[in-house]
Length: 136
Image 1: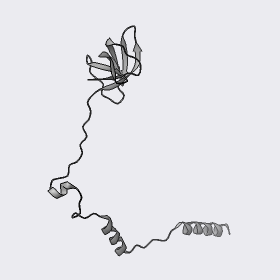
Image 2 (image 1 turned 30 degrees about the vertical axis):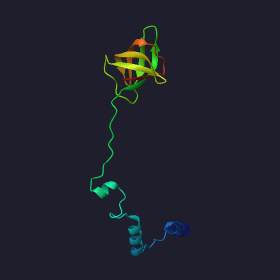
Image 3 (image 1 turned 90 degrees about the horizontal axis):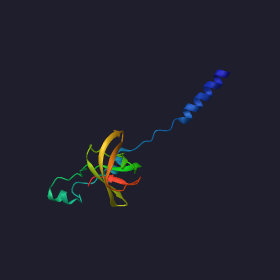
Image 4 (image 1 turned 45 degrees about the horizontal axis):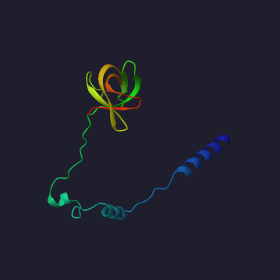
């Protein structure tokens, strides 16, 4: 009796989950394809009229280093700069420090570097934590 109930419940479960297959007529599907595909004769691009090859956009990577001052020692006049998504600058490279778009200091990369952070000496001006450091 238990076996009969288990088989009955399993049969009801599996037949209830199966959905009927939808029949799509081939003529309706081909009509839909014809209306959604643009024809070559009605192209709106001016390049198609002149016969020139279409131009593809090209991305040019920016090679400027841009970082942020994360630590400052005003007595010894150095800052720690975080170059999170930028390439680390080389040692002895000179960079500018900007605050709200205005240049406030010049720094010289002196090292050491640790992951995304590098130390820079303050040459001129005054820097604060949060200032932007970038090459000119």
